[in-house]
Image 1 (cartoon, helix red, strand yellow):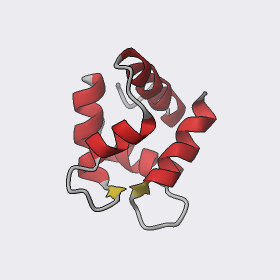
Image 2 (cartoon, helix red, strand yellow):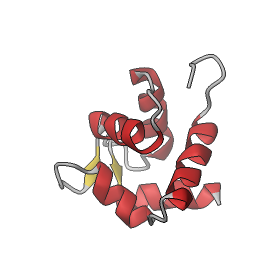
Image 3 (cartoon, helix red, strand yellow):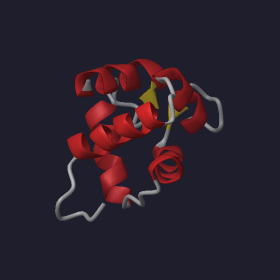
Image 4 (cartoon, one colour):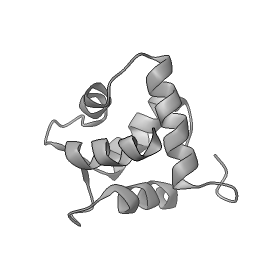
Length: 91
């Protein structure tokens, strides 16, 4: 996704479509992205997860925007509850 015409909402719509296409749950997505199993998705994990899931390359700035939009508790990571909350807004 080019940075000029990119929005967090658009990225999440594409991620939701990829979830549906792969018949994957949000829990399954979280497990796949949280590669170090620490209970939260950090920037590099989100970057690699989106690249693998949607074959899109996002810039570090775009990844930061997604984390900032989802991160309710301010720890600069996305936990499962934050992901579920953000993804449910897309449905």
